[in-house]
Length: 236
Image (cartoon, rainbow, N blue to C red; front, side):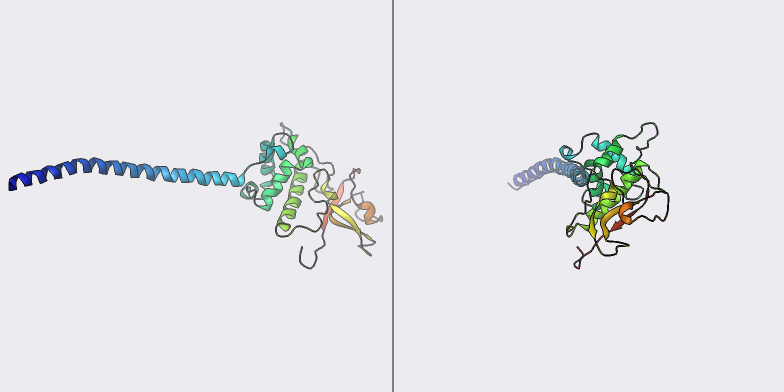
């Protein structure tokens, strides 16, 4: 009986070992598979999250045309002054600004959509500057900078008055409102926002500042752009 029981125990141990080794191999294989698949799936999720953050446009809300092509062209122009990472991140003021340029700003869209395929140049802007020239990419850059300024200063509290900022059909020199204030600088006329001084060939003109402000129906080159803002007591 003793020998018989010992034989049964040996047979049981042998059967256990027979099942244990394949089961162990199966568990090891499953562990390796999970070790490979789980990081890949997590990486896919993180990449998707990054893509969601950088992306995309609601094309239905954008001006018609090649929106993605416009974005890449605008990014190539603006990456000389702003990191591409900031431009691609739509949560940043810079990301919001380039999306406004590409999607909503009819003046910039017109320039970006009509790039010369032979030279890569954009069309000339409507009002060039005496020293800066009239290259179209300079106007896209200028409008982007002003848009980024607007977004960065209105994130916490909105502006009391938008001063015509981000008006897509207005030259950026007309992103202002006219107020009156005694003796500013030599009279009552006080443009608040962005305004530009017309260059009529003289660095010091005897005409009043009111007569020197750019209007959309004029073709004079511009002498300079000025930003004039009023800040109230709570820095709004």
